[in-house]
Length: 227
Image 1 (cartoon, rainbow, N blue to C red):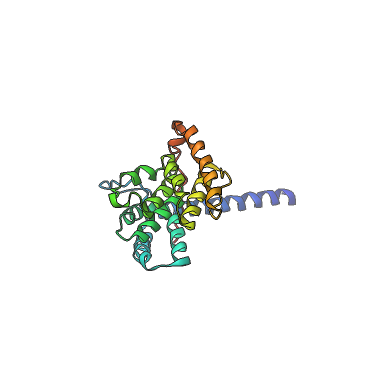
Image 2: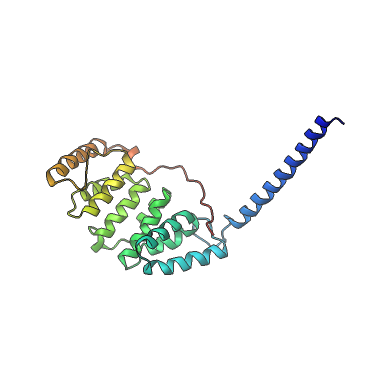
């Protein structure tokens, strides 16, 4: 056997070993992120591993006592967990504390998983919250998930007297449509009114388009377990 032949054989053997190791690791990941659900479960989501389930419960219990950047980091963590955390987050949306419910909505919206739309719409929504801040957060979440029926609520939010509310509505609208119509939440009332009129005209021209109002159908990729 020549040196060149020996080198080819050695490379082939090393490639085979590496491939075998990769398959083993993938198999281990598949067992860790098992999609098998118990026969009695009605949840359509991937079940978390026992370790992740405990972590989800712990972080959910911690959520009310977080503030500032810590709260933001926790929202991002839940969004990264994705599907295994959905049942917990959907329950947290009904929490009587508006900030906790709002954080759960923010985490669900950050997943961009359009399958959540109908589950969120099926939740009982308190009548007294229909026009409040939490309802606005719900509208932002549904729009981020692809539900264009929330567009009028977000456009109306551009007229809110609070700068932060106007900014959040503008951000959600721009993310969904890639349009801005020169809206600046810090501008004076007259300038904002001109931009809002453009938003209203834009939506009026498109509001009967069923394709715009229906959330996308394709399911997203599964989230990795961030344990």
